[in-house]
Amino acid sequence: SNLQLYSTGKKCDILQDMNRHLEAVLKEERALKKMLLKPKCQESLPIEATYHKCIVELLTEAATFIEKLESHLQTVRSISQIPTLIKNMDIALSRTELLLVELEELTEEIWKWRKVQKEVY
Image (cartoon, rainbow, N blue to C red):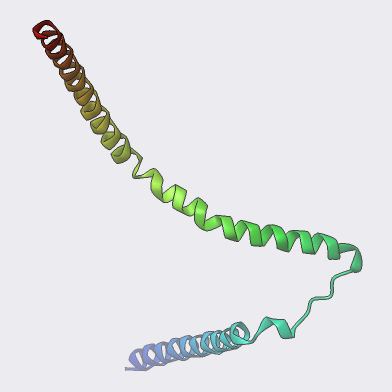
C-alpha cells in the first residue's frame, strides 16, 4: 500500500511539473503573440550613420527580391507542366505537317486544273 501511495505521489509530482511547464509555454506564447501584434514602426533600431546607405540598398534589394519571388515561384510551378506542353506541341506539329501535305496535294490539283482550263481555251 505504501508503494502504491509513493507511486501515486510520484505521478502527481510529474503531472504538476508538466502543468507548470505548459503554463510557462502558454505564458510565453501569449507574450510572443502580443509582441507580433504590436506595430514595429513604433520601435527603431539604432543604426550607425556609416551603415545607413547599406541598409537602404539592402531594403531595396529585399523589396526587389520579394517582387520577383512570385514570378520565380510561378516558373518553378510551371516546370511540372513542361512534359504536357511538349506533348501538346508535338501533336500540333504533327497536325501542321499533315495539313502541309494536304495543302501541297491541293496545290498540285489546282495547277493540273488550271493547265486543263488553259488547254480548253
